[in-house]
Length: 194
Image (cartoon, rainbow, N blue to C red; front, side, top):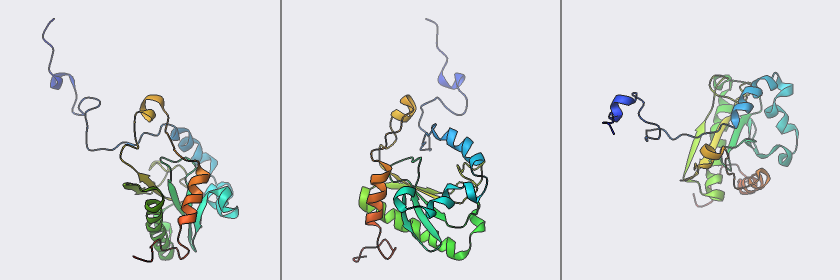
């Protein structure tokens, strides 16, 4: 056989496929249909699932806690078991649209959610964030929501890539019950020893 060219001669500056880089990728091809359809499905407060959820029971809506200005709900299309959303009650699209009280409560509920998830499922990390606008990746851009995704070492394996399947180890109802039952009555998320 002839001499083979070295890797540098046949690759671009992005390196070979599979070569590790600094990114932890969370592949979720199933969400593409939701993202594409979600924007058109939510055209007003009347069609917004985050506006409708507080009007139903906590069990039916998967709400784990109701605050004064915001509530905590399970993501119907979770990246991992325990994937929570913190939503203001007001139907506003952008982080700059919320007032100081809403901002403070969303932050406090996020901290409490992290403490509760650590208590019930022992994640070793979290992804937190808000996708702003349709081009920013928001599945429902019309109503602001903060994601809280618990993470564990090895939670992303070959199934999502090879089989386009994500293994979620618990039902949404079971996760909602565990998180809601562990949520402190005072909303602080702190044990009495803290």
